[in-house]
Each structure stands twice: as structure tokens, then as C-alpha cells.
Length: 204
Image (tube, rainbow, N blue to C red; front, top):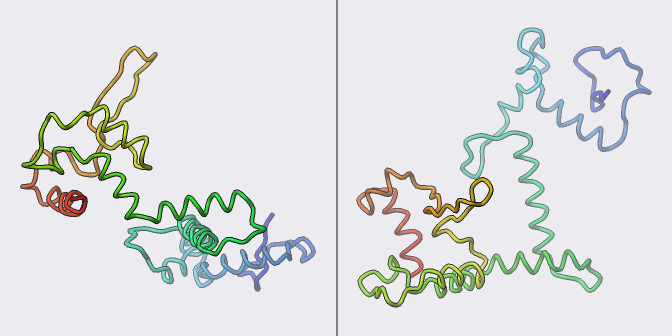
């Protein structure tokens, strides 16, 4: 049984102090739990507000999130720590797995080179060439092969997958973040136009 150890509990637990975890980790966790609790609320009246009342009042949403919770905060903290670690200069005695992770991280950060490879792979794609497009210059199988094998980009043109025992192969457009009813309107739709301006025009 875990007991709050960072201060006086709002009610008696019936356990001896010797049964309470006194490690620094337990003290830290207990302190955070007590910080989020609202001892002014009777748990029999509103247990949720009693356990999380101050968390609701003191938590600020960041990064355009429309919700948050403790797991979200912990994930963000872990990502921040990993980013700090990967952005440090490499040392001679560093573990190999960390060097490889840092190499991959720096490769992903090199947006200019990554986008250039992607643009080169799809240089004859109709939307990019627009009025200059020549249907003879596009080889769909070669283009999708280049995207998948010469870049880190996923194939966002079409999805291929098998159904059941593999006797049925499905080919369908890749699922977009845009709604189908928006896509059928083309550039007349505001959301499609914004997507086109932010993605396609930047590749030209």
C-alpha cells in the first residue's frame, strides 16, 4: 500500500510510519499527488475534485493541445529529456546505440536534404509539374519505388494491403487528414487550398 509521505495526510490511514515508503522517489511522487489534491473538499461529496481539484485549477494547456493528463505531461517530459540527450555533443566513450540514435536524429532534423530527396523522387508527379506535365515522363511504379527506397518518407500515394488469406489485394488512395467531401471540391475548398499552399507549393 502506498502512503503519502510529503506532508500530513488529510485523513488518518491507520498505518504506522514505519510502513510508509520514505525513499526520495516516494517523497517526490507524494509531493506531486498532494499538490494536485484539494484537501478542502470532502472526498465523500466529490472524490474526483478531492483528488484532482488543484490540478484542474493550476494546469495550463500548451502546444495547442485541447486536453492534457499526467501521462501526456510525463511523455512530454521524457521527449524533452531525450531531445536534450540527442542534441549534446558526442563523446569518445559514448555507447554505440546512443551514437546511432543521435545520427538518426540529426538526419531527421536535416529537413532541407530530406525534402530535396523526396522532391527528386517525385519530380514528374502531375500536381508538381502542373501545365508542364508530360504523361510519358511519369512511371508510377518507379516513382513509388524511389519514394520508398531513396527517402525516409512513407508512400503517401496509395495503400496496398491484402484481405483475409491474401487472395484479395486492395489498392486505394492513402487516407488523408482531409475529409473526402473536402477533397472532391478541389482547390475551391478552403482546407484543400491551405493544404496545397503549405505542402505542394513549397516543393516547387
